[in-house]
Image (tube, rainbow, N blue to C red; front, side):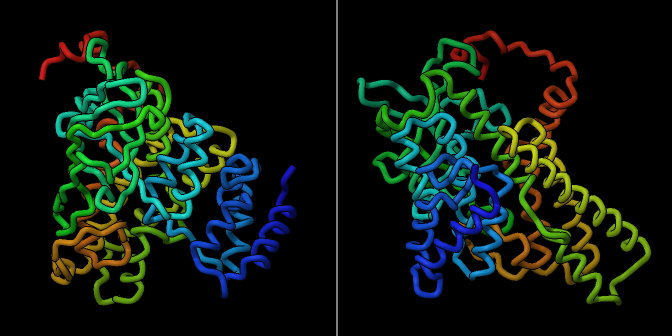
Length: 394
């Protein structure tokens, strides 16, 4: 059994064979993956050693102390947090070996083609169609929206309707889509921040080979739940140091700008600081639970708290700064590859946090998930549960 001492030994062997000071970044990351030190809880040959998930921190600490390069998880978060666990659970051996290594090293960026203009909160109502054309493949037509990093992505995780004659949660199939294929058009969506990190994606006669289907035909909703549960944990349960995330900048401003302080702001800041720390520690507990299994609906609660806290903290920061908080440094149209909440000014944080209660599942939908799947409350009455998708009112 692989233990902490064994992992330290393997990490030191990697550092000796691939000295960070003289080894190219990509070469080092590839070697790290091949030695099983990328994500130690993954199987051998797929970047891991089948070790307990909790031991990843041992490897990370050794590599950080040695100044080893990282794989920039903020830039490839969709691949790491959503595509990888889904491929690991439902992919064929060929798919795992083809996709996981370049995904982890960052050589191939991933995006998510789930939401549609008419199927955002009600994702199961999606209308993008995938038609089987022969034994070797499918043709996909439709439109997706709110697609982060589509402009930088090589691959996408895609769900599409393959059978309109059954209720909406059935008849969906999960695919891997090559974003460079003919028929894939990516258009920027400019946000309130001025940036266009999101996109809308049009799919016109896009050919997807049968080898890029993930899971069984018609079982895409179940496969997608793996993706969505991991997404909510990735968004709401990210590992942070104390005063990491949004609470950090406002706490620094409070300490460095005593002239801005008032008693009321002090009380509100203390309350939000405590809530941020509780959320951080709850995230640690959630990650420890992941060691024993797959993420469950608890991630929905974490993501709910993440959105609410970010919006309250950023609002307090703008109020603390007064007129200065209304300034905005740059509203230039850009298409960034990552979201940097703490690298910009208070105005950016305030505007960007408005999207936190929409992306990764709206807060309204997540409240239903927590109510039904965590608290065990009765489900809301539904009239469309047994109606074929083609017969739904639109």
